[in-house]
Image (cartoon, rainbow, N blue to C red; front, side, top):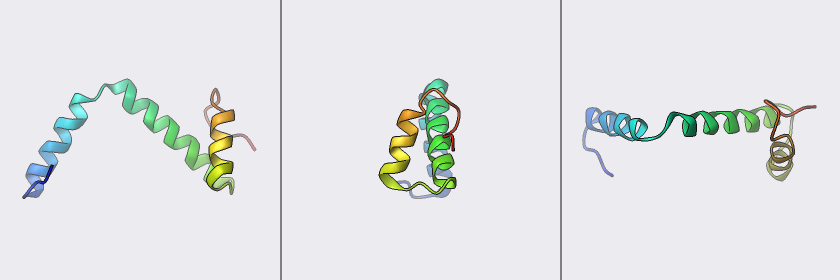
Length: 63
């Protein structure tokens, strides 16, 4: 999807976000936050994946 102007790209982005359910966006944000929490604690790569997977029911990765 190539857009020639910024306004066209902005409209396309709004259209795509409007077509996506809010709960999907919310889950993506929460999942991203869990990875950011793991990286802040110094975990990298596989260790961060493991921590996020095992701490699935918590809001952030525990120390």
